[in-house]
Length: 183
Image 1 (cartoon, rainbow, N blue to C red):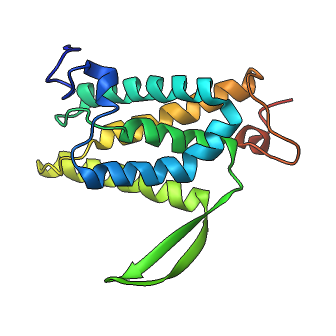
Image 2: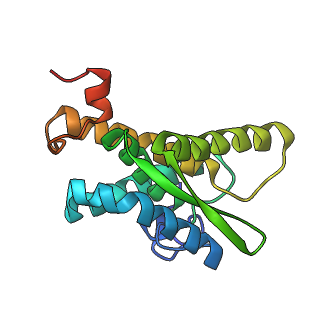
């Protein structure tokens, strides 16, 4: 496996690929998800732990992408998917606001469960990866990076909760609490 320039499309290799993007729309999409889900996760974990886990998840998702996909790891999508995985474990009862529009006319905002928003994107990634593999087509998107990032983030957040490295605030219920996995 190569860790240098080219394989992960960055002069900084695997971790550097987390900071590069294909184009401006890729960057904008990642920043929207980071804003919506990352603020709460960062507030819960603290800046240092958040940044450390962000890069760990980015590295894991990049490695998973290199093992199971022909699409090179490029961009923060895997790491940000990890943030969504952490969010769903830490804040399973939270809702998110989703804006919608038709053409250039803005129509409004839906408030949906974070399960719906994150679940939709996770299911989309799984479905499109299956389509890509079965048809031989390539969408040029790192679906494996997204899938592995979400799962890695969820596992890491669960471990942090089970080991009491982080705790819910008063009135919060985590996914671990809801599953009754913690005494």
